[in-house]
Length: 124
Image 1 (spheres, one colour):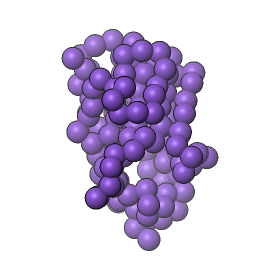
Image 2 (cartoon, rainbow, N blue to C red):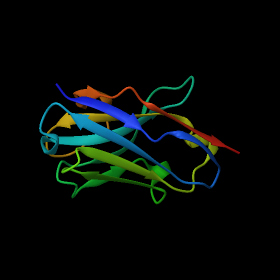
Image 3 (spheres, rainbow, N blue to C red):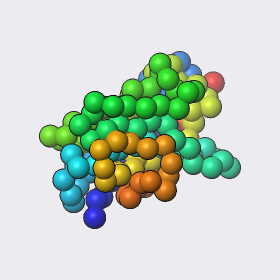
């Protein structure tokens, strides 16, 4: 089992920045690729970003490219999502997910473990 706990969410004005964190425990963190997903009210959960287990490969949904950066610190068992130039449409609950394997994927079903989520609200 891998336990994932997100933190760092909050309220920010449009154009502002926020960094959310996800701390893992239970298994060898460096064996897992990691992903961030989000779910806005009334919408389905969607892929945001993913990072390979060694941090060398990242991927993003088009709408966040150039604004969001995913990174990880395997020594600290933590994955980060830095969000810049935030927009009201980025408002959602942000979830991190772990996938046993080398490379992150964009589909929910490919992930083995999920955190409880952290709320990010961007005001206009």
